[in-house]
Length: 405
Image (tube, rainbow, N blue to C red; front, side, top):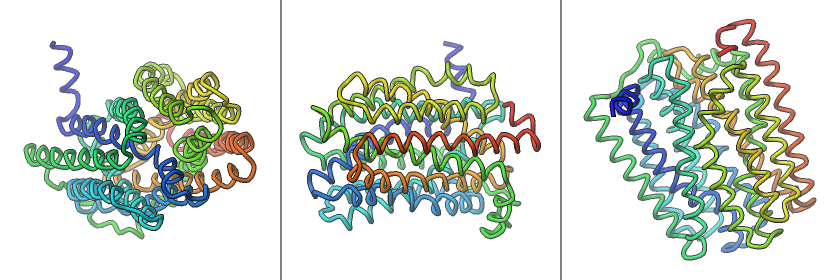
């Protein structure tokens, strides 16, 4: 009991609220967004490229929104940005319930991406604000684990709702986000979190923030490499489900179970793999992750049933475990205290890959087929290693301690 109590005390109660809220909100979101491509195909009979645009518009709006949201959280405080963006996400999912035309889905998903891009960097910055430096990597790993605990249940619920009533999935997600925002607001008031603003950050403009970040070569290489990684990983939510639905028997069920396997693997393996990876430089860990992700993407092109689907997702999962928490940790190490939110916001530029991926992938899927699509994606993902190599060189020159952490 004492060990459990000590484990709880290592993080601020607000951090635990964010982690718990992530499980519920992301779990319900994973019951809807991965199936949005299938929903649009079946209900609106859209061309794959238009479906890619509908899905890709969310990360595109998040590219600029993340930077602005992160900057505003530094300037005016974390609380108003987080509460406002969560409430907006709740309304978006209720909007999905009543949307009937492609235009409305595009608008709502753009708003969803914008709201999420305000919340994500701000919540990560708040976790760093409230956590000791030595425990931040652990906190970011727990956050990623929380996302995948929700993701382990969400797709199975989504598969059921996709058959029974797809619109009810949107309603459930909207309710979960609304409950999240209520609980977070109450807890912030209870602990008098308020809107703490760094004096230095309040004097920094968006233009000066852009200049500061523009000079950070390490961040630049990290973002460029991450754009390619996200280009590849975006296929998981856009073109993989379409390919499965058309190419294999019970494709939706296979895809749902595959996503749950992915999430369960992350929950079980995140901490052991992260502990092992601490022996290596962080950028080297991300390079290894790119190799695993590339092999996984290549395997998708040869899926004809359960076996290859599981093989593919195992490689993809190991890749994401190595890449994504390490990326958040590197951003925190690069950021100054007064610009932490801005740095996490700038890192959202990697979502450009999530915009390009579904559209380019949708075109290749339609014109060349799944094997060619996933072969091209696999080669592109390997290309990210070039940027991580350059980023590692900058780390070694400017901050050996960070490079080895």
